[in-house]
Length: 144
Image 1 (cartoon, rainbow, N blue to C red):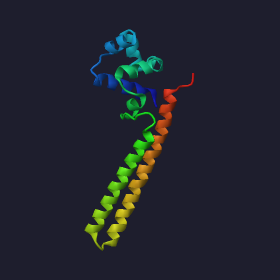
Image 2: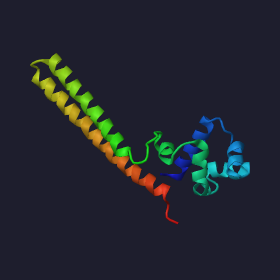
Image 3: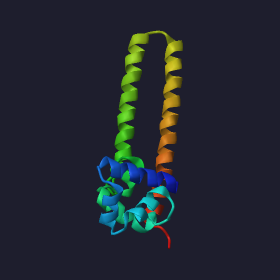
Image 4: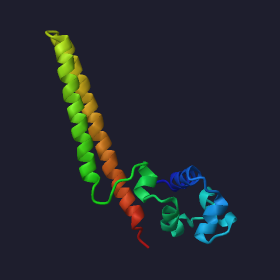
């Protein structure tokens, strides 16, 4: 993840909790200017304090990055639930449209083509999620 995006997400999470930079600095044992420099990117200390920042904010790194709390060991099950939900919704939509369209085969073909496009988008999103999960893992255990 781009470090500037990480800093922005930390800033937003801090503000969402109603914490000032001074309060965060106090909790981290830093002076306000040092913490402010972390958020502004004037120092690379963000990684030195990332675990403490996440603890103060009460969120995991994956939640900070994605906006979702994904329990450890459950992302694949959660993704499968999402896929199953989408599959069910798609099947229901197809059945509803086929009933409404009746014998209009051209409209059904058009609908099926659109569904294929949407399924491809879901596959692309899944690949992006897998890639981002790998990046999160790398951030959670940086090589020193």
